[in-house]
Picture 1: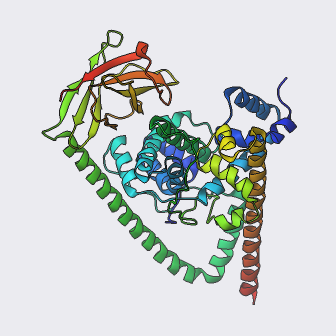
Picture 2: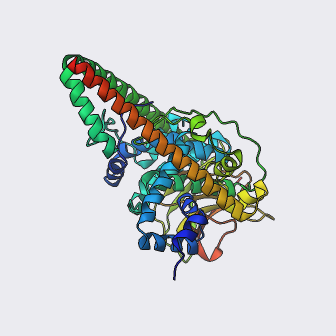
Picture 3: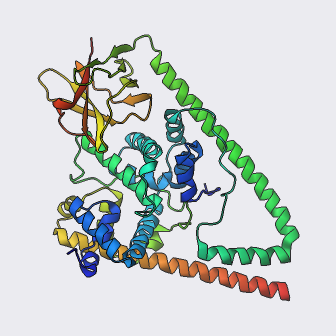
Length: 200
Length: 260
């Protein structure tokens, strides 16, 4: 659903005012992204629903602790979602460090967008990325592996894991910058065409 | 003296900082470096943005029932409709001006068509919002009814907490149902938590180590918690945030003795 979206600062304001529309906006604008990580960590859609619910409640109850000078709202919320999911896995007696089978979750690429993150194409985003970087990025960011757990799982030295996550992010950052440039270029072209159309 | 800018970058500490994967000492070093080198803030924002893009490329749509249940636990009540358009300006300030100019040009040239189209889009968005509101309210009502049904079952076992001498004011009731295998806690008075503490529920069985169950805080009045088959006694302790694998008995709040 690509309906109306609320800016992060407005969401924070709404939740601080105990206005439930804030949590609804969190769910609608960020829920799919948070859930994508939660499902991959807990590997069980029913448990994932509980974790997402807990995450929403924690966001509601801990919003006073959010400091926009420290991080963006999404990063803060993702931290809560990841930690809640990892705690749930740990309490259930699983080990995130265990060799894990591939989890075929129904991924909905491009289904959602948020301010500044419109229509993300995973193929384009990771097309130039060496699989060895993508592996580390996926394990650590999407599947909740710690640095040492990722190193063990991928049979790599700790330092290599850190180097690879940095390399993966460097590629991603470049890609995101290029996407912005392409978007700006498209808008400028549209503007020129519109102006020509208006004058002719 | 703290860590250098190059060391921070080369060691991938900024990336790990954003994921929350740094040890407290490393975290402190990075935060100090951010204060010392303001340019790191921009870099950090770019890293956050890149991670966010990656997460948004890997979305999994959650069930609407999750929102309904969360709203119910938050406190129920009528939910004001989501605004049909974001109030205030747009998120990207660079694009904002450009889009504004584009809109002006477009409005000047094709104002009439724009007006008509916009009206139709607004009407459609309003209708869509109303439908979504109805669906969320319906789900919230269903979740409320399900919760009430669970709490009112005749075969529920209601047990009040036997508080320890350390926390005599504690008042919590457990709604335990062996048929549905569901537990709820009705939270009354609870001892205050420190900033890095949580409450944790435990299942105690004969000849077995305590089994760690739900970790919670006092943000809701009725809380669904884990059910553990064959539990003789449930117990609640105060633990470090996020819970523990074995209980800190010096921080035992109380127990619920179960029968049958």
